[in-house]
Image 1 (tube, rainbow over the protein chains, first blue to last red):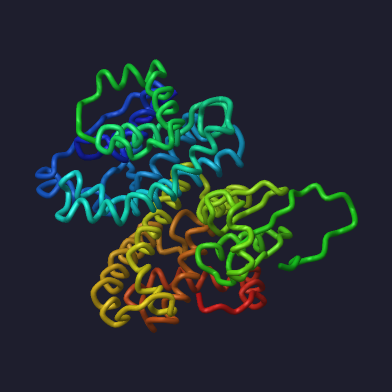
Image 2: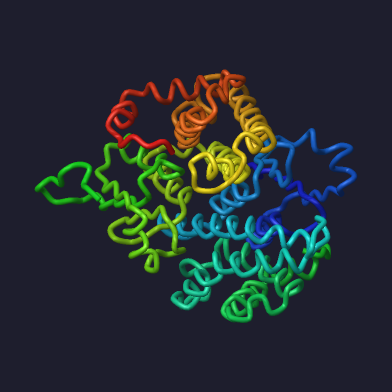
Length: 209
Length: 220
């Protein structure tokens, strides 16, 4: 059979590309992990990327933009999308709710990380609680109800990698933010301990987020 | 709420579908359209704010829309749309096409986020300077998103679809949004003829026209 050639283009960080990298690691799929610096992006790469954005997944030379579309594509190809259409739909719903939460959190997150100017305490006061309320009570409920320890169904899925990566960042950057949601730390530790993911974490380039 | 069509008396082998939302189109309309296009009976459950307040606590994610499939709830408008699109054949013909339908839908979400404040002001749900928002935020957002759509339509062969050779849910959701947008900003997308052709072709589909003619009239 002909092997599909994958190239994943992103910045030298984990962020929205990391769930895709983790799915490839877990499924044992070879891919080119192309990391573009900010300088290279403006000088050379922006015009080459459809939608002028990264991440982009190139599949045998053809581009797919948008991190969630890439995530869904890889999840479907390699079995990280649940066992039934309804499970897949719930995985989609969590991914979309995570995106909505992220949009609500971003004003604080970007200032904290130094990606944007602003008053970090004011941003925190405005964003932190409402953003958290949009997502984590619901994830906590799913984890409490699902004996498998995964978010949806009885096997690891795309959103397990997505949520684990973000909870890891929250642990590093905002300790205490999720103190009322210990189930999320148990979940993150479980995903990080999966052998293929543990091996990937040990060898992946180090980045802040 | 009301049943869209009477249940038949013989054994029901199809699941029951109940789609709950406010009395508007938003990003739920695309799912109503796919249910209708596939000839599937569904309960078009439109809730006023006080009815919603009573059931909000029990809704997963505390939000509308919700799709109930045989009584099991599914939240998030585009998760619902993707589920129905896959079921009824509006998701793209290959995994790669499906990824492109998804990518355009994600880009549309980003665009909707950019124009959200303008829409809230325009519909009277928030205070603000509508004209200033249009000039500073909405016009650039339209330009960015619809240029992507126009390019996509051209790359797809100018065949009246954004992806592949048949109707997908991105054709539907963009077509309905254009109608809403041009209700606020006439001729908003005149600079994008291939996009307008997708809208024209999509809305001229007889089965869809059936729904467009009978659906409750709403401005959003």
